Image (cartoon, rainbow, N blue to C red):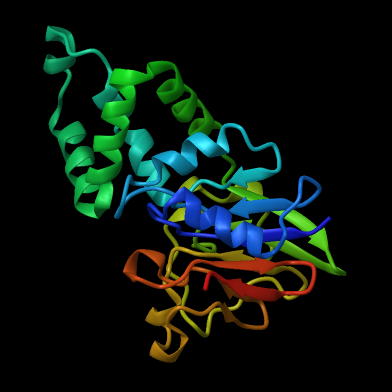
Length: 237
């Protein structure tokens, strides 16, 4: 059994993700964590990957900020009635505007099509996203890992994970000099590695307390897998 992580696929074609998994000979006994932001920005907005996730018992999505934004706009898929129109507050309009400005248009379009052709699967997707965890902890290869989408806002090594707010796991923007736990490696995405150093564009970035695996897929970079067992990196050719 091997444990892999990837992140911020942002509308990657399902066939490309499957080619990457085939490259590492991903098996039923292996495990894959996707650290958020499957959706938005390109192609079908990640809807095919979301449908695939519903059927994969050894793949777990951890909630990202883009999934959280989509969930905040779930009302867009309700039946349009006089009541729903009257409930369309300024706050709700702001949520929609923010989501669409952050690349949600392609996902919204694909999900509206799914609503028309397969509403049960659409509901399954929303149910799946609502149950997606904010973080996971795993131990493998003699190391302990914390897996989340963005790192940790308001970090305090004495604070329990249960004491953090949900936004702390999905909206953090760590600085390169920030340190997390000394005895646990924190693995996250959200911040493209090229934002720290242009020479790291398209590459996984490792420090002594954390690893950033957002390699910039929606900006033309090849998706990557990190195998936690030995910290080996794999990239789609």
